Length: 161
Image (spheres, rainbow, N blue to C red):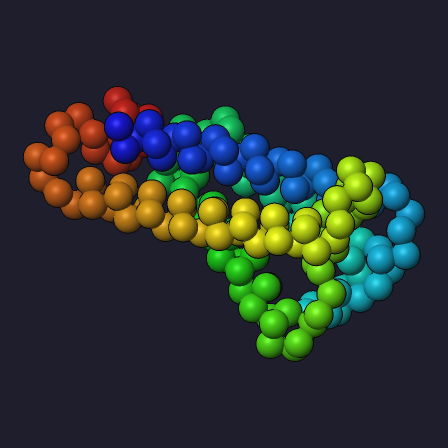
């Protein structure tokens, strides 16, 4: 049952990351002024950041949707979600008050107010963080507990881990 839940989580994370990456790439073609504005944390123009982060999101989403190794998939989700959380903490530390423009102009197209989109993105980061670390903890426990579940050995070719 836990494997099914973890696989479901991994697929949902892949879908969410695909959507947010797609939103960033769509935003690159919108010609918005925000693309030239430097990001407050990294100092790069948002346009470059959308391209870089969107590419990473697509890569992780691809592993989630088409990969077979749960440890790798959940590890990558934990890695990217931790990066998003650290970025958000950086925004708090520098007292950045504006909503994150992470979704590009897609929120305007869908008539979603920026503060609502920002809250949704924070919830997604929380979901990815909690889900990935819980999944990793369970996978670690299964790997370390002899006789817990015969045939469910993380990393074995027979289970697809």
